[in-house]
Length: 628
Image (cartoon, rainbow, N blue to C red; front, side, top):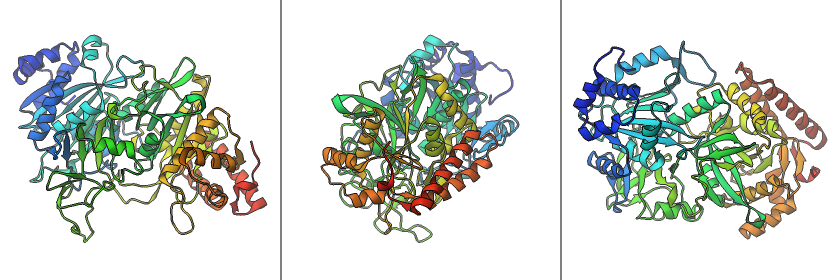
């Protein structure tokens, strides 16, 4: 509560809302919601309030984003561009806190005493919305009328944020009206704060993204960047993980996609990758797309089923090009589709440009202000025309390969899970775990990746990022692993687990694989799920047989695949694996609630690697291994 005292909150609502808006709010039979909205109005002091309850409201929000200069139209009327400013352009790890009563300390999780955090919020919020319109939207986090779905209310003074919510999530005002007061929902309060002459957030030192697990409420203040402010994106994801941990189901940082196999069958995969590590490109390499980023996975009729909580994409645009990403590129360059671009280059003649787009960048404006080729920042570093974390927001319905079941309230069956990151020298391109526990420990819990531009800080550094979810965990890593280790008790058929690595480099520092090669890795995994190809048994998992890859490369890419390349890609680099195991064990020793199985599995893997090393040396050719 922003206000502890009792007061006549209905009179506040009657004064602040038009009759039409008040009627819409009161149709939701939930006095606690009414009181919360009144508290925000009283403290943040918006000039007006607008409720988003139907698709007719979408155009109003879009128009306001342009009028408020939060979005700039490009030469194509349906395309708009938003800029966050150079200091507010990625997720803020430091100031994103999970509020726990008593300030519970959890390794790797940024927590804060709940009472202290809420006191900070109460100091910052007063007057933050003065002179601005406050938008209130009602959304589903998942398909409508689905047992998988969560619900949420977004309050924001940013038409840009509301515009994103409208494109990314299903509007669910009708469910609030039907189910209140018996509807459990999350609440999001976003206030942009004071802006400078560029329209950028001024008080960066007071940027706060606080997640209150007690009230299922998230406060996002003094920031504009979508990963911090679009409530149903990563803030809601944290609440979803928390709720799943209490109820025994999984909320994952995963795409959901279908891979076509023999006889035109569709096998559904989920996949977890840190931002900028090939997640979106893998999604588009698949044959059908359910979702590109998040997955709610629950037991249903004895099998794990997954739904995409979103109906749109807030994706990284850097590097998207017509050769490697033809479908996505065609969507992003279609003038008829409604698209929000953020932190790209907008040229003086109204053209949107990003790294990967055809043509050369021309003078214009970008996330750092006026831009021209060769422009440098205050430290003498050249400013790229489009930021590496530049984004696009689109609706999934624009995709040609959108799976017909993407709106299925009971989800799609999950046959396999993929985990991958940026790894220059250790993991092979594709490898199957021996079983569920081995996969959860060695592929998911042991995931490391080089940092990318999606978070503030230095890119390129190798980071521990279990399940590609560390930034979003509201619970301990140990508890999250335990949740997965107990999941087999809830289903009759478990997904296979695979590790992938698209970033393996040769002795000269060059990537060995082409971007398009991931199609072959997907096709091999699909066949493995159905036990239609054999595999080689290595100390770290099961890898493809050379002849199977030769056939798959010819069939799906029309390429030859040499023995030399196979040996280079699928060799076991024993010293690197052993070093990795030592790093991971050391990390988990610092996490008190790490399940014993983690250490058991890693120590056994270390034993197998040592045995291979003593038999064959530091680099073990895949041709040494036996079939399984």
